[in-house]
Length: 133
Image 1 (tube, rainbow, N blue to C red):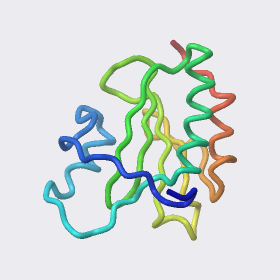
Image 2 (image 1 turned 90 degrees about the horizontal axis):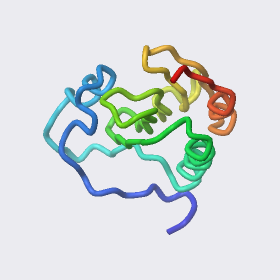
Image 3 (image 1 turned 90 degrees about the vertical axis):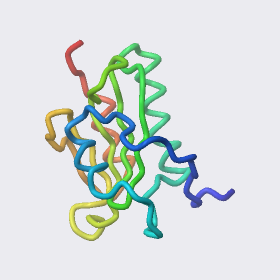
């Protein structure tokens, strides 16, 4: 497996965190599997996200995560506690790559904290992020 190959995960039941409002719009598009390609994080992207995640877990700020990879976008959801709503989401949406950038960090409320073409720059907002416990 090379650095640019996407990481393949086994499919799960539809709706990884089905109670989340943001996820409902992702999973409600079509429950059937088709031949459409799935958007996924490649190894380098996932390594960068997990490096930030590991630092925040070590600091005691984050506790859990979930991955959702669909036809429109890939989402790395971060949870403060094991609950039904993600604290924030790191999204990869190739459809926006030429406009605002494929990567974004989105809060639970739907507010986009940062969007851009480079994942490292987008993830830098997570390093300084202090959300109430």
